[in-house]
Image 1 (cartoon, rainbow, N blue to C red):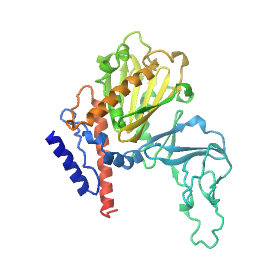
Image 2: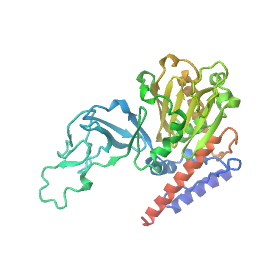
Image 3: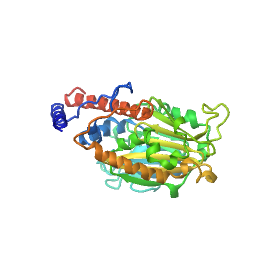
Length: 395
């Protein structure tokens, strides 16, 4: 115990020496030699605060259901990553039905501009009457006669990138990679499916609150190891020996290969997985999105951090083939989630131990988890370096 306490103390000293920033994290690229994230990454508030700007502000995030905002003049306010980034935004459809994602903060004194879903012709801040067009451009402001250099581009509502992929909308404050590069591996595997026909199923969509760090939830999702130990029902349907993970620059894919007799995809001729009994494509996109494709449709999992030890996971269902909804490995998502929650909360208690710091990876079964840890450490270290430069007045 003394060794772990000394190590914890050294971290505090290092943080004080670096302007409150937590120490850099090294996760080796070679899985056969690498160690996992240190336990502090799952519990230290300093790492959590660092992740907000270093990870989540630099990533693509789910922004809603594309079918919900279609009519001209429709506005829909939302909070980007509620509980973490807490960025007030809104979706706006103008008279030509062009959809935009805009800041919901008035450029005068910071009041919210759109305070409820509805249909408008112009946007007006109720605090001081500033008006904006539906594209966010400044229109008018009372009592500003004599203000020099007014209006300027700074008086327009900031516009964020907005991408539509199938039934889903995505945006980001300052994504580190292009949307095309981020979504390309998913498109290459499931782009043959009629995504435009997928319909949101609210009755089968729900939120789960978990007493664990968001990254632990991702760890559990990404490793294959626990399937036969935690998900016995799933193990009866999946061929564990044939189950495997592929990685790509900003994500990974777990191939859920079924046992004979289970419901599987009818893959088109020429598909990369033609001839395989694919029961599920389990995609993870950095940092906190899961796209689980089943023969019946899609289960979107959005992992939203609420604090160092608290997470909300939103399950959002999109149905393609209703007749298959209760068949195959995707028929029991709630049961699987309950099993995952139980073990993840147990791990959260464990990594808080004074006697635990880091573990090792299974080169066969934890490929996805290692890839996640490597990416997360990279983003955090880049954010840490940028914050240190700002602290030192280097821009």
